[in-house]
Image (cartoon, rainbow, N blue to C red; front, side):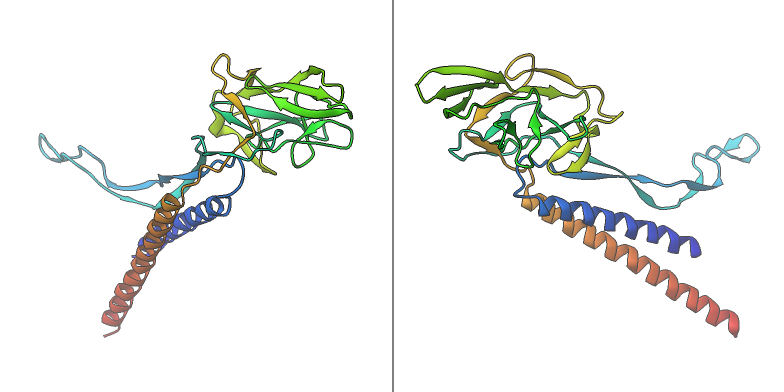
Amino acid sequence: MLRAFSTAATGMSAQQMMVDVTANNLANINTTGFKRSQIGFQDLLYVKMREFGTEVSSGVKSPGGLEVGSGVRAASTIKVFTGGELINTGRSLDIAINGDGFLQVTMPDGNIKYTRDGSLQINANGQLVTQSGFTTVPAISISSDAVSVDIEKDGGVNVTDSSGSQSVVGTIQLARFPNPSGLSSEGDNLLAQTEASGTPTTGTAGESGFGSIQATFLEKSNVQMVTELVNLITAQRAYEVSSRTIKAGDEMLRNAIQIASF
């Protein structure tokens, strides 16, 4: 009877984690370039009361066994990198990656991190940066006399100066990972390389499997509200059933105590 209490408790804890993940997905439904997470579960160890194939009589073996599980645990959260909807902003420094790849940015400590958020800006030093102020890799500088900035599908940054002459001041490179779901979420729309993600490969947008760059567009979150609400309802009902299991076990234990007291 007491085993049912602990088993049901693991179920309640797991569904609470699912609600937490779903809540984060819904909270970021309007976050540029955000990728939803889904949670994976694993069953816990089993108590084997009778081994499978145990000999029940001379020359006769049982076709089954007897085992009782110990519950469930949250095993991992996996990012889903399906593409989000591309929306036209009309802003020349806004870019979206149409396909595979990440923008690279340099952190203050020199480390490189990765993002799908293409809301680029020009800082006070004329450098191309993200909306959080992190410079792109490779670093690209825009002169102060630039009249317009155009970003091509291959990441080339074209600048038109006050005299009307055009020049390419740099190329935005993309990075790919063997296992993008292994990237670590760092906040600020940034992802960090891990042992699970593998080593990144860099290249030119539109070539060798890299996605192309769409200027004047931004990639919306790939969170689907209907899917998340269904997950939320499913987790809530599973949580309720687990709590009822504890209640049923409590009532059975109370009845057993009352019977024993007679």
